[in-house]
Image (tube, rainbow, N blue to C red; front, side, top):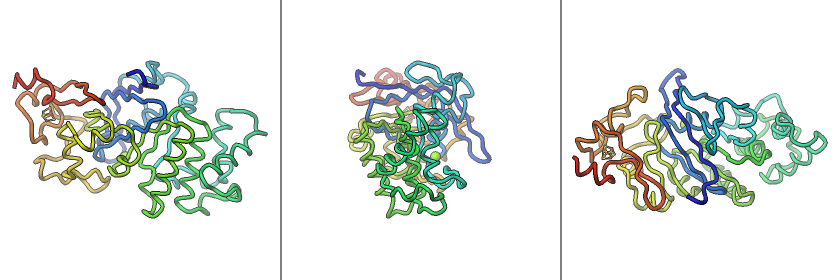
Length: 317
Ligand code: SF4
Ligand code: MG
């Protein structure tokens, strides 16, 4: 569409830490400037792997990462980092405990050689004002701050570069409930004030409904549905989205996937089911779903990957 600002295309990626395997399998995200795109899906669907790939922290196993059609996998990682900045779930582990708050916020300017060192302290103070951190914390260490304050530091550090895209991966999941809404509202205020573009990854559907203009639903490494937020929550098209919203599935990380209602467990991403990868769990599965993968079908506000919306496939079934 006309207001597409950047497209992010990602090839195939596998991440194999100790436990579950997360995969991304050919994903295209289209973002308009100044919008919040929510990314939802169960734990293990590939959300965080996708974020790491976009940030250049994880190379694709095949295919490329393209930003506006330009491959970035072979380019200088620094150039990408300048354009895309992360805000992670746990601000404590993402902040260097031996650096002061002022140094942490300033570091991206230093690394990317933005302006002169004489200008940096003023920029750091400006960012501290923006995120609501008193200047006196500049000489403190992360351990001396609360969880909410540390996340403000992480936000200041991400935004000091005025990135094209901010990837917020579960930005408040590690915080006390009382602090979560403060940080979410801060993120939203900054996004509007500065015209920022966010990819918001969250297992919390209420957070996504509150924050996002559009929502992408991920299942086994694919975006199976993408729509305007109201559209998606009022009238979900994909059977997986319907199940997710009906709380048949639990997108909460660490709680496993109790989906007795759907009759099958979360499949192994390295050996996904044939055809539509959702077919073993889908209450609407047709014979064709077992053999043919659905293609994206465009609709008013996005797309859906499901044979139910493909007249030809329905007829063949
Ligand atoms: Fe269900 Fe078939 Fe649609 Fe897949 S393509 S979601 S199995 S109806
Ligand atoms: Mg995750």
